[in-house]
Length: 285
Image (cartoon, rainbow, N blue to C red):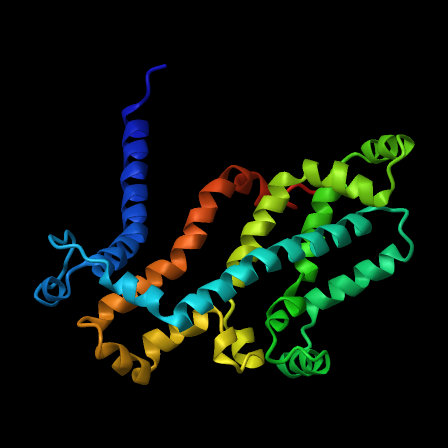
């Protein structure tokens, strides 16, 4: 079918617009990476360095030789892996239980969860709760209080509601109990939703910052984001680095690259599920 000239113009205009938006998003990441691997002298003598002629990885070597940074990277990796796994287990188990109509006191539990989405107790009650649980200055203080949220439970429950109950009934007839139905039937059928929530949880745990400031006093247990904040803002830390690195700006850029690369590497593996997962709750009725 022959297309009208106005349609072609509109289509190419869309391509150009999307290209400009994409370039505006990618350029800051590219520039940060270029500065991180540039020779300090070349960077200092150029106004806008886009194609470095001399490449060096001295900033990365220095960062990974710093015990505080490597330890913080390990803490953030632990939070992202263990925290995400625990959050998926807790959220999916609670959502599955609430999606079954035969569950006792189901309506009251749903009301209680909805209540938590509307009213937040605030900072002080959360701190007192963590302190009374004995989690202050403990790594679990960054996982247990944020294992799940009412909003995530309700979203995943709406996905589980779409799974036919006849599958559950057939599994029970075959001898499965509730845990086996949840683990063998429901979870394999919910991979797009679980992949999407895993990405959300992993990013949230990797970017843990405010809770760590409140609950963690020992610098050996700091996650990566606090070390990043110290590296980028704290003048005393900058002066310490200045003694060993000719270009502190490049050192900061290298730290930003290291902090963002893991999450950027995870996303392509979950992308095929992400498009389906983000439509959770979009269909009503």
